[in-house]
Length: 222
Image 1 (spheres, rainbow, N blue to C red):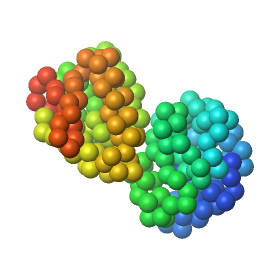
Image 2 (image 1 turned 120 degrees about the horizontal axis):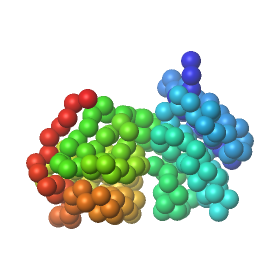
Image 3 (image 1 turned 90 degrees about the horizontal axis):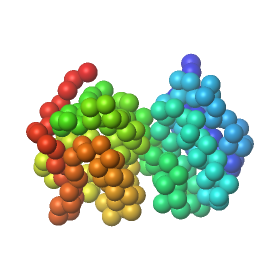
Image 4 (image 1 turned 180 degrees about the vertical axis):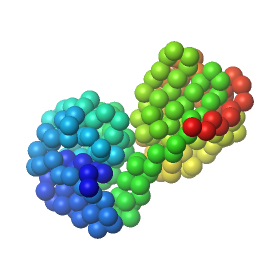
């Protein structure tokens, strides 16, 4: 059976804790080794998720992380660290972050969320959101999204022009809380990407956000 999860680690304690949690519930995990150097293209074949287990986020770790992201194809990336700056990790391109030690159920919930791929596309003309591919398109223009960005824009587009609370977006995207800076940063990145392709607007409303398309949203089945 091919591995579902590729586990990279620079810390054996964090690696072993993550490995135990995932294998006990039935995930097939491949461990790339003690150093974070195994995320080559062939290593990622068939993998649905990359988990990077760190001691702390030093500049060296961030450089490794960036390399993993650049070679990871479409796999989402979860970073688990004993000492880490969430903002730096997310800016480096991680899709989610978890501080170690953590409640085991939280790790499993994050993994389930990241591996969940809803087979759908959403259109808010002229914008098309391809959820499985994590791509936002307008005519010939296309922009790739992180897992968190895809989840957020999908929630907003599916709601039409109705407001979506920060609590709902935080839970869906794996943010720590509705007040998390990670959620705010993901929304800011989405606004910039939408502006680049003139695909619509995300407006702030009391307690959340709303997506403003040019025409009403409809769900397109694959």
